[in-house]
Image (cartoon, rainbow, N blue to C red; front, side, top):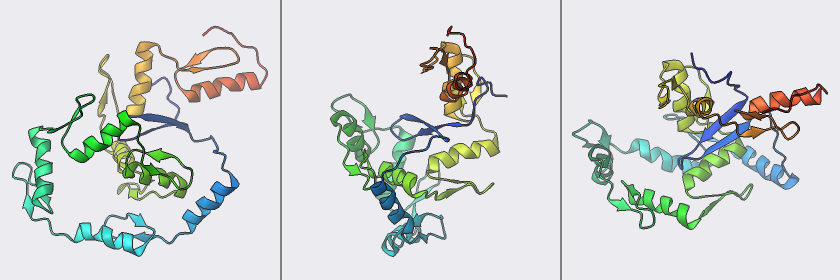
Length: 249
């Protein structure tokens, strides 16, 4: 059984492609301006067109038509290594780099290498600070379009990725894959210190703190420190009830 010091599911950790981690609390209520709320309602009122093949949804008939072309294209180019089929030789060539490990595109600034030039272009924005994709609702900017698309779902509530086992829906395919491990029992995240394994990286992150002693969440009233924000919130209820406390951390 996973030992994560009574991990509280009220705290959620969300991952993205640039290896950043964002902590959010489900019971926190965002404050929206009147303008923001009106803009959000515009997104919610847009018509939805759903792809019957993959269940992705779109707000225009043109978008879903272009999307369905992906399914309509016959995949005739086969990878002799793994047997997967692709729509063109160029896509197949890019795929083969996974097997060969070749990364021909190099960053001149840090030396990191990539299998595709498009990935290098996105990576270089980390160095330049460029974020060309902006959300029309809140003004937040992103380094690539896929991150913007995922972010917009936080406004619209769209969750196009569905678990075929329990029907639960998710805003990203990554979150769906992580969720599936609950059903399969897979524990892909391993602690290099003690060998303990976990179904989610967020659980591993918290577990590692039990080895390092890190307690990044601090009570501003008594200066006690805690492993998770949820533990800190639970602790603060002691102060709100007017109970005495020990100032030792």
